[in-house]
Image (cartoon, rainbow, N blue to C red; front, top):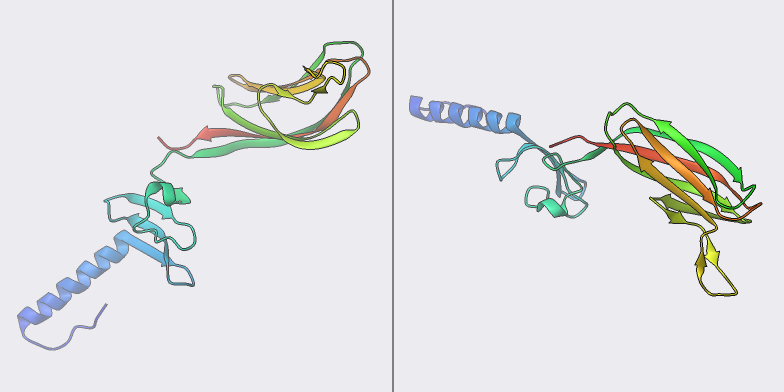
Length: 189
C-alpha cells in the first residue's frame, strides 16, 4: 500500500480510496507463488467470480488454469476418507466352494464408496492388488486353457457395513494376506 503524500484534498482522497480498494482486494483474495514465481494457490475470489480454494500443479498458473488442470478445486465434489483400517486373514478350503466373509462396520447409514487393496498370498505366490467386486485370483487350466476360479476376494457395501468375501474354489488351497480399506463420503455438493 503506497503512503499518502501531501497534495490537494482531491489527490489525498484519491490516494486513500486506492489504499482502501487495495486492502479490500487483499482481504478477498490471496495468491501464493512458488519459488519459480508461478501463482499456484488461490484463496478467495478468482477471476471467474469463484470463492474458495484452488491449487495448480507445478508450472501452471492457478489464476488462469481450467478446472481440469487443477490439483484441487473446492468448488468441485470431493470424496473424503471417513474411515480406514486393515485386517489380516488366512483361509484354507476344506472342500470346494469355500467362502468366508469379513465385515467392517461404519455409521454412515448408506452404502459408501469403498477402495481396498491387499497383499495377498495364494498357492505360494504373492501379489498386491486392488480389491473390487469379484477379483479373480485364479489361474488358467493347463489342460483346457480356460480360466478357472481358484480364489476370489470381493467387497460389497451396505448401509452400515462393508463385507469382504473370500472365495476359494478347491480343497486344501489357502488364501491369506492383509486387506487395507478406505471408506469414502462425498464432502461437497
